[in-house]
Length: 391
Image (cartoon, rainbow, N blue to C red):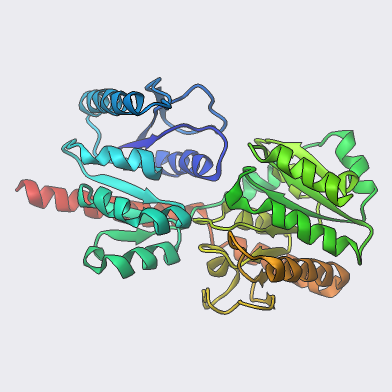
């Protein structure tokens, strides 16, 4: 089967890394091509042929309109010349491309719950012009179907996979001496990974870390990533007086070598789709503390996948610790509970050991093979339906 994955870019970000990873999953059995609107900065390696349309985003309205038509022309030419069987688009911008008729099954993606909440009507419009939608969490799927139950036969949930063997291999790579010196000065270190943007809630993590340090003066914070909010975080840690206890690694193709040396992993997001990095941290046997944001954490850390179970007080769950949801408004209690969860976990050696051991077991549930089987099942069904339509 010939599959075209369409993405804006492969610059930094969880969705970008997921698209690259999906190309690798599919390449074992299929002929895969990754088409990018803007391929100038490719941060993640992918499988198959890489094609750059060289049509980066334009700031003006007219520029965006012209870009849309130019992208359509290039994509149409590519699909015709390569004779693809399936077009698989990632994220909202590439999903919009489905409004054009390309005479093949089209699959759109829903990979950010926040975007789904705000613009579910846009996903509906895109799905009306497509054969299927793949969400990366069960909750995102359920939310969409609560709005549009008539699409139940077209919406699927497939978790992102993690390559445990590769993650553990990369985790053994050396780090800079400066980082080792930072670790030596801090008996306990918490780590978080992601783009420095509003959705990741790192400002609240910094507040919680500062509170936790009041009871644990040997605590350090490692932030792996980069983005437009970096200066905001620097200003915050200086104002809070913890600048010497926070380590910024910058963007890293290999975050695992930094994560592997820390005491536990923290997720403080306002919204997610499926937080890959939580499962990746578990592959490194890191205990996980995550706020109960929509969506992903409850599905990873609770057997019952109950997003309503954690509201006012943090809870020790089946595979990790969930804290009250961080929002865009009042987060005083959420920060307080996050700081308390950090302090209590790191003070209890037995609890740390338990969650470390259970993390590895849970990570095994997000295997490459499980993702491959689900995707192939969806593809086969779409091709079968296509054949019936052509009979």
